[in-house]
Image (cartoon, rainbow, N blue to C red; front, side, top):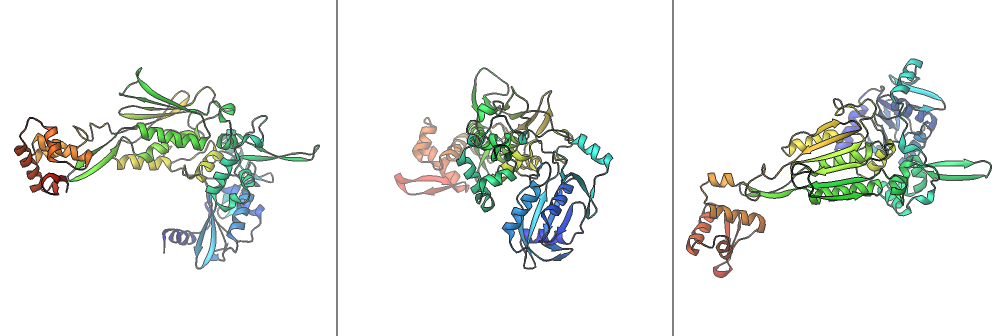
Length: 468
């Protein structure tokens, strides 16, 4: 049994509750919408479709059922943006698993009714609970707003097509209809003219727009690299003004190109190192793009790369009930449409476990945990990385261990040369230490071979040495 099958088997052993619901394949979209909204008004949950109570029935058309789930989410007010349902199998039957994320930014209703899960049922929210929830989730979602004078022509059809291909058949069948389900487009009807138009939301424009800078000059990322540990007059800078997915890719490439890197010898093995774990850098960058407050104009995301750290500043303080002290455990999406679209593109984890991953990756690399700090008007993530000095001395190799082995400086120089060039000859040795006799250098190399550090290849003038 693979991991997915084991996970669904474990899920089906649990009783229905406020976080878990089993529904039949012939459930009505309206009833499903109520369950989705009820979970969204709580702390999220999972809906398994194809069940009759605890009995597995299965679904006959998974693609059609997926479309129905997205339509049910669209029937909520405001429309609920969900990850694509996943297909699972159990006892030879096909099931559909729907995840309702925690930390959603709105209070959701279906046909004017606000619901919550009570045990295994959906029940109306009591007035006092509804009032408190409306206060807690009072933020207006910027990404679902409609900018004035925006039209479908402002979106790049090639970017939409590429996104649909990434999502798969459910989006490729009708990309524009899928963007409506994702909250990137809205349908606007003019009864007087008898027209039905598709209008992009802020999310649609910032994800797929032709001229993003025209609409959102604040959607800029500034990258700066300083040589030392403090700001100085000498630096490299790049400003990126593009759609959100392309900004993420370009910014990541820039950081990778400009962070420190090197190699060292660990015993007899060569080990390459980078200043920061790439996964942690990506999490910091994508979280800044996905969760920043885009209502703040005149400020941009700023990423500053120093010799010892990376600082990632995002405009806007932490959203909702999230604080610096609880952000590892709590979830809240300020821009749920942006988060889900970036998840569709494989750039972010929809369920919000990026902070956990960042902590783990930094620890695995032997680095301090990220530092999270709120400023007067924003949020700062600092990653402290390898400086080069902490990895090695003299060119990025562990020469202290070699000295403990009794190697002389000529032999250490030879091993450092090999760490970069993969092979060394007698002539290379002579160029490294021109004042030393050829016979002494030959004995140095022979000693490294005898110690089992090097392997001699070839004969006479064609002889060279490699790490064993």
